[in-house]
Length: 355
Image (cartoon, rainbow, N blue to C red; front, top):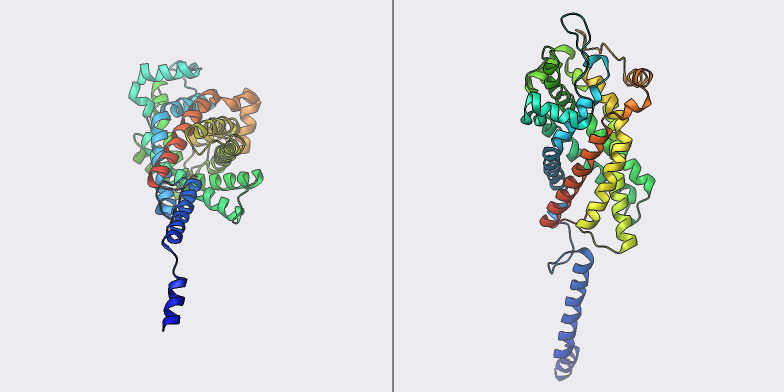
């Protein structure tokens, strides 16, 4: 018994050894917290803020903030892109073609305010927000899922993998959100039509939705979806891929933490690349969606995206594909900045890891 007691007592750590072990444990936890960016003294584990649905909802909320702030530039861009095509011309009582009143970005915006009212700069905002319920949520969670899949547990993520993820996420998200985008374009152009003396086609987002379905059926809601999906694939190649790549490049090369400075620099680059790559497809998409249709829902001006592209270049020149580029870029830069800052800040406040 004495021997057993002595052995047990010898196996017990001394008070100093126990204190040292506890100190080592605290140090390890502190190092883990510093490495992961967490301030709580807890082991790193799965957090609800990193879940699928939380990421989805945060992305929708951040996109709604960005959309509301920059929507007037989107309306101006849409009006500019329609200029020059047959669908935007009007004929007066004597049969003469009226000249368009607006040509530049600022002239278009001031013309809308003067002739239609300042609140018309947000005309069509409702379907635009509906669109982000699908588009922004799907694109972010899809990109995140593809990124994790292609990484396969590795830390490195090559440019081609990021590009593939961005294209796939953007194409899927936009295809699902195309009906809301089509309704938005129809509503946006009503103020323009009325200012030109044309009879209005729709009176609200709900009326536009019903009219599209009545003329072309349910599949009519996907009119212009091909150039729309092409545009979204290019835009997200520029936005998601550029943001992700530039952000991690800056952090790796400069040693900066995952902070607002990195987010701002990355989002500015993302907005510029996205506008450059997406504007031509955006022009084609807008014109196809805005063109008048026959009783069967078929377009009267263009047979498809290729035909629209050929007609636009043939009649107006190559640079017609970049009509509205300035407002697109000016909008995408603050949109991307507002979205990514909001998205990252909300996730950080919820305790999620860096995106």
